Length: 192
Image (tube, rainbow, N blue to C red; front, side, top):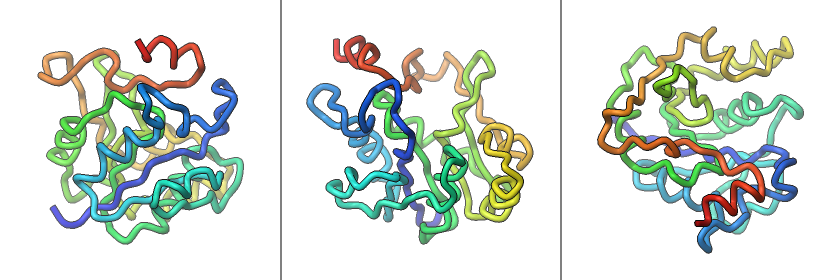
């Protein structure tokens, strides 16, 4: 596979957490650092999609949303426009239990005609903020954004993304693999 860019999405409003989620410490490390560390071995370029200057200290370019109020689809669109490579690995800033085996499986499942490869839970729930996206998504995303259609999962279905089953038989699978840390209560629970 050719060179790949890494994108960490940290542009959410963090309402339940009450402060910038990616900078909240879990076991002494900022949440965003977990995602950066998982992606960096696979990527020769990393960017952070965020509307806050708080992430400048991590040493990667921070890309603000070009279209405000468009949620993750808007953040991802802006980030894809700024990366150097056709292929892009994407993780949110608040999933500290994703590890390299997830990334390896995503990359092993990429075919030339895939616009995106997205994990699918055993119960059929998708993880659209974690995946592999190509730059070919940019014009389709722009169409949706121009129409005010901001739901990322709806976009992925429309774009014909490949939904990759993550089943319980995988050696690295566990129920908290894709868990999001959204609140102080979540933080306390997983700090243990």
